[in-house]
Length: 198
Length: 198
Image (cartoon, rainbow over all chains, first blue to last red):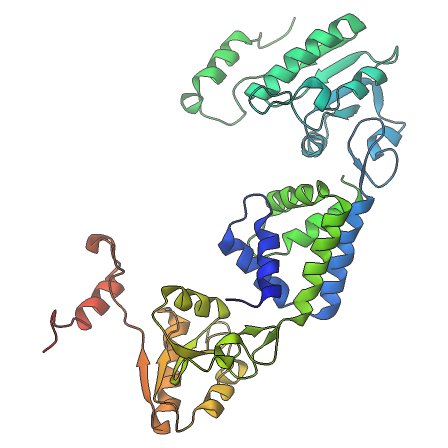
């Protein structure tokens, strides 16, 4: 019932992940309110997505050949943290507690989705491991696919002479023990630690 | 931490109504997956928003001077349904039960938001009412602003010699009476009707 140009705009927004028809309409009406110059600015911003590349070394997003982490000579190159997605890098960086470099798999090995090791950024990880590399920290999410990917990486990295570690699983800080699911509780018990290390 | 072109894209999405940072990131990553041609198509679709106008007569959206309802000679021009937004026209049309024409106020009189009658599309409503017009149906939402707008329109339309009606308020079909709020129940009791009209 809307004019075709407006229907096309709604269709466009509806293709975004998790956006239904009602939200798509709201977004389209929001754009309709913008003046001509703002539309031009929006269009320019979207066009520039073409300039965004994957870092040649680690696979994180970059405007250039290498990302800001790989270019940064103050980062500790002996530690490589392996994450599934670029978003995970940002989550880790926000903590301010990690000074090593990253490797973005851009996916996870998944039997249910039919994703094999060769489909994700694993080859480039193997290639960049050298005598400088001391530790590979596997920071995939503790989901089925994340665990499977971690096990696979552990297997192929073992004979590379590097320490392979995995982020700890356990009770999230500030949570209530009686709200934790069984698997998390079991992990938390299995991985229990001395309160003070000798 | 993302490259600046990508941050700009996230900012863009965050300006859409009801979109937070997490969703904006998801949308930006979805765009990143698109190939160059798809980006060009998206850009063209957005540019065309500039061609969308308001119908000269009723204020509904249109690619041309007049919208499809105002151009349609089979619609009953003696009935004008007044709605707040273009979305409301689509909601009414979907019922398939209305054959008159529309008038889109493009807003509501609101004391809390400081919107006065001259700020919305009321002048053009008064101008289009002529001897052909028999009934003006006020179909604003039963909210504070919708009610205030309805009362205002009723007042100024009274001496125009047209019948001014308002959509009925009452229990929504299929709802449970004990879940209805007090105001709705009071309206439903006040507006009670004979089950069979004589």
